[in-house]
Length: 183
Image 1 (tube, helix red, strand yellow):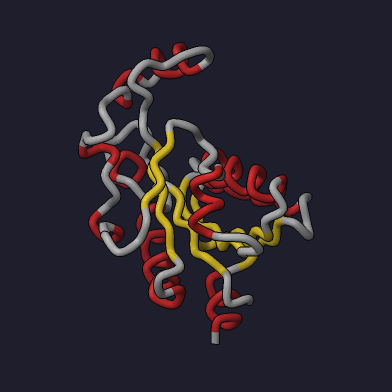
Image 2: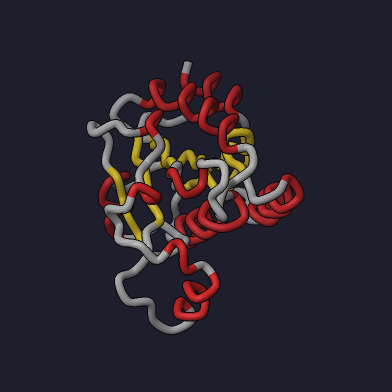
């Protein structure tokens, strides 16, 4: 892997990891462990993201938040905090009111010709939305399948299968393969 590979950690937040949350992602604890293994190997080249609710939803987001009213809280609400394992102030945190986290800010953090090593939750929502947008922008994306989790194992696999169709822009890989490439 290139020296300009960045670990991008999608939405490892209380709202997705806390049992009892309507948005709890099964498999979150295992993904948390896998990302914790990867992060130190990337040094300063780690960025975290947070999904947050908009102050005033517009368009299709209005019925979305009517359905998920519990999540329409300020960005400072503990639900949107990163879980304790990932509260690392030395790494940048990008907060977005959208599923996809690829934008000019993320591009500026990663820099030109970066490789995005993508992890987090949920594979079938924010991970796939980020991967496709970054690939469209010409970024090499490596989705770490065992460092992502979906709302179900079936949905996780379907999202991975869909992203695999974008090869060679998007590559599906594993934690062990990423660690080996960094050695």
